[in-house]
Length: 161
Image (tube, rainbow, N blue to C red; front, side, top):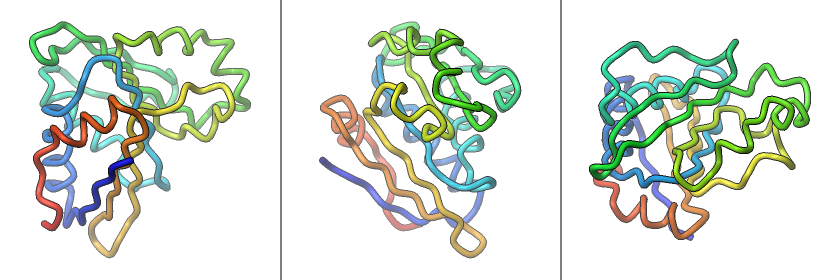
C-alpha cells in the first residue's frame, strides 16, 4: 500500500498538513492517529476540521471520547467524528458506547489512540503516525485500503518542509 513521509518543522506545518488532508478526504474514511502525548494528533485534526468547513471551536474529546462535526466533502454533507480513546479502560467500552456503528461507510471517523480499542475498532483506511523530532514532527501516512490509497493520491503536500 502507498505511504507518504514528511517532516513538519512546526505547528504551522502540522496545520498545513491538516488542510491538505481535508482536501483529500473521502466520505466513509476511517483514520487512525498514532503518536505519543504531544505529538500533534489533536492539532492535526483541528486544522483538518477547520479546513473542511467547521467554523467553530474544535475541542479535544478526551473526556467525551467522541465529538461529531458537520462539514462538506466533495460537495456532500458529511459527519466527521473525532475520537480520543486515551481514557478507555478496555476495548469493550468502545463497543458499549456504540461507537462501532459510526463506522458506516458515510462518516469520516478520526481516531486518536486506536490501540485502546484494538480488536474491536474497525480497520483504518489511513494510518497517520506522528513522532516528535527536535522542535518539529515527523509524519508518515499509510494507506491501508483502496479508500486510503485514493486519499493519498489526492494529497498535495510537499514531502520536505
